[in-house]
Image (cartoon, rainbow, N blue to C red):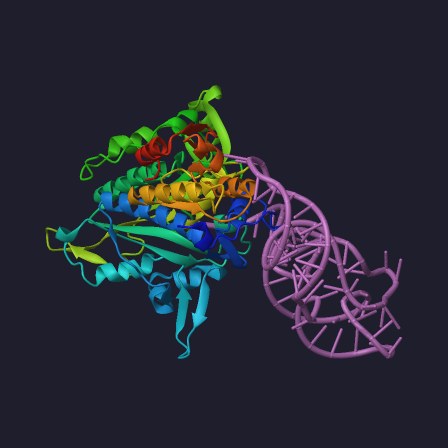
Length: 443
RNA sequence: CGGAGUAUAGCUCAGUCUGGUAGAGCACCGUCUUCGGGAGGCGGGGGUCGCAGGUUCGAAUCCUGCUACUCCGACCA
């Protein structure tokens, strides 16, 4: 992409409404624009990152055996009356009436609908297990939206739903999601801790929240320090096994959110120097809730004995749009965002310090073509901004690598590359720079 | 949902108390100088002062109603 043809409305000044760093940086970097309280337009840069995160989530869900579908945003009220949640959900649910006076709602979640899809076609235990997921915009009419995309009213969520023949099988489905979640967050450069969580109004017996530790987090969390440093399980697993040892490894150490916290147990189980109490951002939540929906909605399968039984279900959510905020909270400095390479909107920023200079233009074009061919998704700054502004903008939007090409360096056959995260720079020939960047930059 | 605020140029904000021709910085356009970390000069464009009503010779400013947004708290699969 050439910056001169792109749409990147960066702001020099901080908009007054933004209180936390991720919100400020997303607005300043021209990633989002607020349209109403808790409702945002995604501008090109933000949209690119959103798509990258989506793709990582998709790949890890697919790897764990989940199957992607896409359900609509609008749902019929009658479907929700089957589960009893139409009346139970309260004012957070946006209710809509169409021209025929039909009662609809903008989906805050999809348990009812996916159960409807499942029960219409699955009859036998032989078709289980199944895990269906989608990534779709949700709407929850929060009383007080804040923190930009971290707590919006409209937000993009990946929600998966598992269907199993009994509780033991459902636990295996739960474990698959547990492991897949740890892997997908790790791919985004996040340190995430799973914590026992309250199941809340959705109901159920077994639930974990996945928490990114950050000072600006909305909830207080308590855990064993070792959990923070423990790496992800890795993607190379036997996904048909129960994966129980991986889950046990991470659930045997103390970790709980505020509402589940037991100070006495915390102090008994965790030596003082390993006790960590911090604030966290919830970026995922998984539940096993058994027959909560399958019984009232009559989602049943015939077992080997020919008897029909309600299926055992779980649901698994990742806050896709919230993850942008969480990643920025976890990775930024005074100059702006520092994108992990896996989710960066562009892989390399090619900075032309003197557009119009024949040699510089040619070198930039060569670099741009080379990096494009190498799938490094370069962003070429070919504008006539002053160099200070160019550097500031590229630092702000957080492209992992900068390739700086100007007349002075070029005269002695050199260009400069800079790593956004470390600030480290080196001068070298254009060819060496391109080889180096092709080898390590980008996804 | 309780409490506190805000609304004036694309952005950040003065001006409102005490009614009298709509302001600044940044951004934008033109031009000159400058040119390797958010430069400077000169010239220029851009505003139904959130909306509706009222008071007044005259309202951004005073009064009434409404709307939107923000912050603190409670709430939050």
